[in-house]
Every structure is written in C-alpha cells, then in structure tokens.
Length: 88
Image 1 (spheres, rainbow, N blue to C red):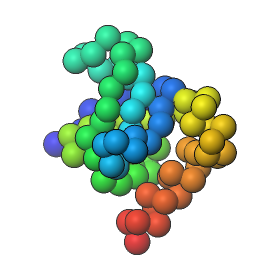
Image 2: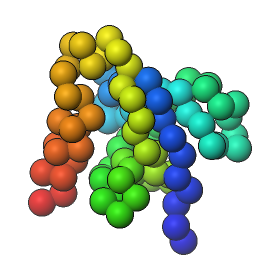
Image 3: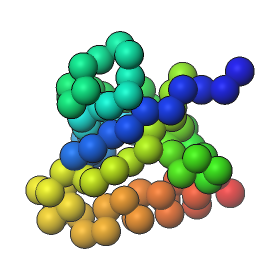
Image 4: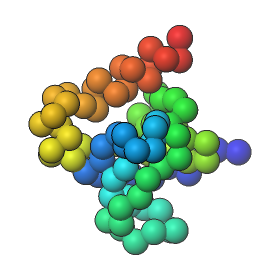
C-alpha cells in the first residue's frame, strides 16, 4: 500500500523530537492547511516523489523556515544528502 504524500512549508528539523520534521502541512485531510505539525521520525528519502518518508506518510519539503535556513544554509539539500547517505 502506498503512503499518502503531503506538503510541508516553513519546515525545520526538530531538536526536541529527534528525527522528526516540523512545519506547516497542506493537502492532509487530518489538518487545516497551514497548521503546524511534527511528523513522526523520518526513515528515508523517496527519490521518485522527492519526499521525506516517515512510518505512515511522505512529505514534500517546500521552503524551510527562514530562521532555520539562516542558521543552517542549504538546509534542504543538506538534509536530503544526509538521508541518502544513511540509506547506503
């Protein structure tokens, strides 16, 4: 069974919930568009859909949180590269 794919905008990697991503979700019937969520732990990268994968869902990372990007330049690229490296 394929996992549903949602979008996350203004996202950042949570230091409090190790391995999860926080951000404003869209296209998820369980939340209002723009509602802030914490995903479950990210377990991989779905190259075909260009999405991070959790136990039950996949998330397309849109723009990172501006403060997060300022602190961690190229956050999206670095996060994806780390996920790909971890899969090897």
